Length: 607
Image (cartoon, rainbow, N blue to C red; front, side, top):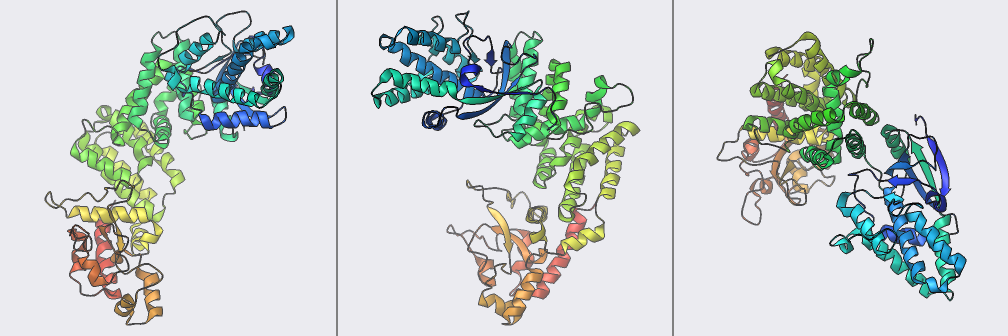
């Protein structure tokens, strides 16, 4: 790890929640809400009670710009909020238990109740709480309402339905477990202080860093009890924190805009993270412009990777949080169209081309599309030009996915370099497509290598690319009347239409197939299988049926489902026409069909 200004200290809980200190642990606004439940509460309680004093609870990571570690006025908690919030609720339940049994305590023990209260609320105030939960899910309001109800802070109303949410449920859980533990002891007072001592003696490692990028680096290397924040979470926290500090009055408005950004990107974290990387990689020249000094063209970084992304956005957001949010909002809306999370305003041709690019695993090119769409007016290109570029990219990715050229690691830089070429040479209009085509041809394998791959065991080499090609071949001959959605999936995420090996691929070749393909010679049938079973000539698309594969050839042609619909080769796809007209299936037929299909594929996906 390469982290500057890191401060690591091991503290007992009694010092983290020191009654005499002024430290406040604040969970940033709009961080994920409190999510721990019964399983985590139970594990924490049992771990503390069943182990010796000094049980290790894990680490917390805070951002602190001050140099005085434990007496600094406020820490921004970026990891460990679940643990800190839960400990404060555990201590609150202990406070309630001790306070309700005050008549059993001597003078010194009653003083300990006040000390416990000061662990939860600062010594010289009546309202500055030690741990400040985030606002999502009514966490902070529920926590403040609970503390007021049990007499730790001044009176305030309890939010409606707080008892149904996790903050109050956690408190009630610990109160119930404490009381159950005390029922099993002969000395109730000793039992209460034994539990308090266990909590106080537990150990936490407190890690202080000076910025969010360092915090994320630590997340990747530490395995804590809680779920680490993602880099996207941290970008959000940093952005909203900077907007708050910069004096923006309506933080809820900015949070709503952030929510819209993520709504455009979808729920998959991988898609969200990819957008933030590609957003920088697509627009790095303009994003770097305010930071350029001297000859260094990209002072923020030449490329955004998973490890550099947060550092880049921290600098962009620190400089201009509102501008950064505006830029992200605009670009995320464009990206939403490309990944089809937003289809309003897309033409059918655009939708189809984006969909094909997605299905062929062309995501590395999204950064180029985003750049072209955003700058379309300045570049003199329109919707038809974007569709044309997409179709060229589809052809490129079909070839790349089968030949592994260029390698995956080079794709992002290749598209970034082409954007740089557009900017340096001032390409506009048709020149953008023409020069992109030249770039892709130079980067790809030759037609000879592509054809060699197409004639080989394509299914075994890349089943995904093979399925895409077969579907595109079948789609070419569809009309409005016989159109079928070959990408439809069942509720169990299984394709309704699947790749079928005509000559079965299983190791136990049925006797009827041995007779047909090799004149009864099982060893020769195995040899033919190894050579031809995964080639295009032996592949087609049928309705999914796990029992179809080993059937006899004639039965495969005529197979129907329970509703009387053809799911074998007579399923209405023209792709199967040259299979259905055969009475037998032989090696010569497979080879001839491979020849025909390879020629068609070479034409379909030409660069």
